[in-house]
Structures are given as structure tokens and as C-alpha cells.
Amino acid sequence: MANDILFGPEQKKLHVGIIMDGNGRWAQRKGLPRFMGHREGAEAARKIIETAPTLDVGTLTIYAFSSDNWNRPPREVATLMNLFRTYLYKEVNNCIRNGIRMSIIGRRDRFDESLLEAIDHAETETQKGSVLHLRVAVDYSARDAILRAALQLNTSQEISREVFSRLLGEEKYTGVHVPDVDILIRSGGEKRLSDFLLWECAYAELFFSNKMWPEFTSGDFSEIVNQFSKRERRFGRVHETAVV
Ligand code: FPP
Image (cartoon, rainbow, N blue to C red; front, side, top):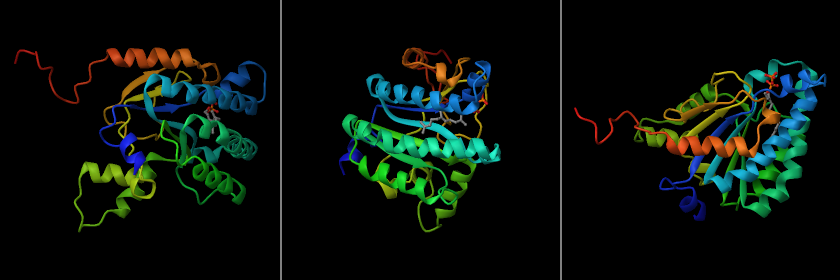
């Protein structure tokens, strides 16, 4: 399958995960309702997605709604769900034009029919995209995702990190390999993982920005990728030239 090659284990392209935090505070600081922060946040996300392939990013996973976000006021939840639906329909043509394959990760059993249709439409229409794999995490919890993958394991198969990663990345359904996260970015000034890609981030380099998500620019993204390229990743080993 073509995508196996482009997104396969040998791919040298980066996987970036982003926790887009700070929409609400951005709006509140400007005296605006919180939903306007989410709307601006969607605009910021659009620009980051457009920039990703130019920075050699092959997989981009963005955290749009955590499973714990259902506990927000019902009006905010409804606004976010409407925003996701509109966004999915609006961005499909852009994605097709730019070779972006869109996947939604997380639970689906709590979405209404109209959102499920939008997801199905976006995933089907963009499935040939081979430049960037955009994964939007909605009703997502890393711990739940790990549990769901664990339930698929059976003792007659080899149980290894690789096998588990493939189950977690749903490779058997999509044919698309999801590599470990190289760069994890969180905007909004907080420094926590909030149940996002816990398995996939085992060796991720972490970057925190004090900017609220709607203020986060392509320049900030590019600067982080540049800083990442200067970090030494040892994956638990010592440097070859080290005296032992
Ligand atoms: C966290 O900010 C953000 C969210 C819960 C929603 C993220 C959604 C978007 C950026 C919209 C984009 C959607 C797509 C599909 C690209 P917060 O509300 O927790 O901010 P706060 O910490 O300041 O309250």
C-alpha cells in the first residue's frame, strides 16, 4: 500500500503532538466569550497544519477535545462539537488539495449522528493523502486508548512494543503506520500531559509555550522544530564519544 511506504516505520519524517491549550483564557482576557477563543484556536490550527509539511512533519496529532472535557458547561461542549463539524466539512477540500489525510482518534460512541457523518466524510475523502497524516483527537483519553488496544491483544500473537504500537495506531484498519511522537508541544503556559499520547510520547522531546493557543504562530512552530533539531536524543544510551 502506498501509504505504508510514505508513513512506514522507515519514515524519517517527524511526528508532532500538540496540546492546544489557552483558547478560553485568550478570549476571557479580551473580554470575549470563550467560544470566540475556540474559533480563533481553529484558525491557529489551520495555519499550523499548513506549515507542518514544510517542516518535515509527516504526522501531526492535535488534541481538540479530551474525554474529560465532557465535564465542561453543556453550552461550551455543544459549541465545540458544532465547531468540529463545521471545521471538518470546511477543511476537506483544503486537505485533498494539500495531500493531507485526516483521521479522528478517540471514542466515537458519544457523538451525535451529524458529527459522525462529518467524520466519515472527512476520513473517506482524504484517505489518499500522503503528504501529512493529520490526526485530530476528539473524545480522546490516552489511558482509554491503551486499555482498548490491550483488550485486542491475544496470547496467541507475539506481544511486543511494536505490535502494541500498531494496535494503538489502528494500523490494521487504516494501513497507516503511526510512529512515536518526536516533539510534544503544549501552549497556554501549563506543563502537563493531560492524558495525551502517553505511550507514543515515551521519548518525545517536550516544548512548552507561554502563548495562548490562538496566539501560537507558524513562526513559533518553526522555532520549536529548529530547537528540536539541536537536541541530542539518546533514547537511554550514552553518547558514542563518552568516556566510560
Ligand atoms: C483548550 O483550551 C482547548 C480546547 C479544549 C479546544 C481545542 C479546540 C480547538 C483549538 C479548536 C480547533 C479544532 C479543530 C478541529 C482544529 P481551553 O478552553 O482549555 O483554554 P483555557 O485553559 O484557557 O480555559
